[in-house]
Image 1: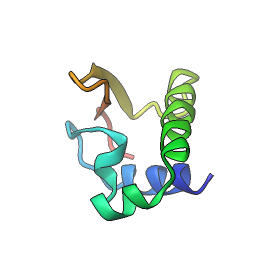
Image 2: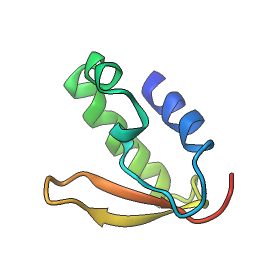
Image 3: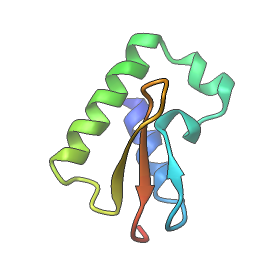
Length: 77
């Protein structure tokens, strides 16, 4: 999935202790260019991969009031 590839590429450039949500890795225009269903699916796939240990350099920081999941870079990529 194109969105996941972009997320992984951009995430690898973040510094330690940086807290982010997936949509923050994109410009507003770029994020909205993806279909809502694709954005939602990307979030679910990313979270599933995270839970399976694919991203050991980040931690789950919970969700915002608007239910966006937050992640924190805990080690350099």
